[in-house]
Image (cartoon, rainbow, N blue to C red; front, side):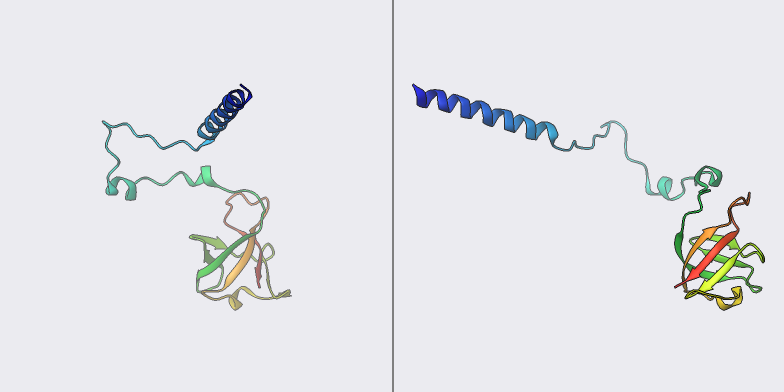
Amino acid sequence: MNAIHGFKVLGTLLAALLGTLLASAPGHAARAIDVPPPTRAAVVNAPLPDPAIQADDSSSLRRGVVADVSPNADWLFINGSWLRVTEGTTRLFRQGRPVQAKALGKGQRVEFTLAPGVADRKTLGIVYVP
């Protein structure tokens, strides 16, 4: 009788364990059968979100690569945006030493912040070239 009771307890424990595992398993994505997925053109040509909504007004340190420099070195193209180098506001450093904006070139990896308190959020604060 004890052996039968032991199997019942073991069976109950296994059922509880299996139920817990099934309940905690990640769900599967579901799609309505009568609605087709979007076409490639609809995804590629989708409108971009409003930049004002995506604006990051934090002064956190960002990383990027200088993709282009304006002829006067007063604008840098980093991470898909033209960012302004403003005398008196933007401070540039290479390996801890101050440098001029003209010292920056295409392909350089940079770490940078945006200038705090500037309304356009396009003015660089500090640019560091490691």
